[in-house]
Structures are given as C-alpha cells and as structure tokens.
Amino acid sequence: MAQIEFDKGTGTFPYFIVFLYGIFLLVITSFGLRAIKEMTEGVSASVGHVVRKEIK
Image (cartoon, rainbow, N blue to C red):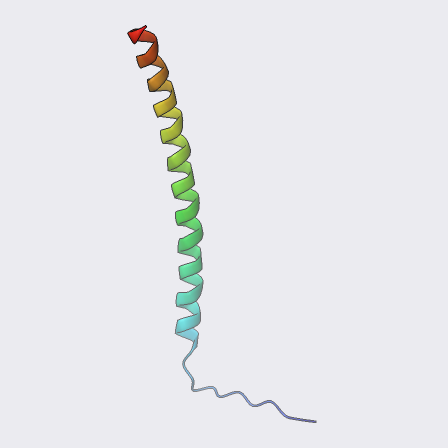
C-alpha cells in the first residue's frame, strides 16, 4: 500500500486563509450590493410616482 507523506514546510496555510477571506468578502459584497439596489429601486419608484402625480 502506498504511503502518503505530507511536506510540513510548504507554507500554504496563509494562502488558504486569504482564499477563505476572499470568498467571505465576495459573499458580503454580493449581499450588500443587492440590498443597496433594492433600497434605491424602492426609493426611485416612490419618488417617480410622486413626481408623476404632481405633473398631472
């Protein structure tokens, strides 16, 4: 049976942490942008309705 040997001196752990942090930032940014988009769409729709009502 083949033995698996790990090289403990590779130093890849910091890259793994940076990778996880990057994924975390992508998720947080995605949810943040979606929330901002929903908030601005609601505001512009309601403001547009008021403006159209005043023009008529």
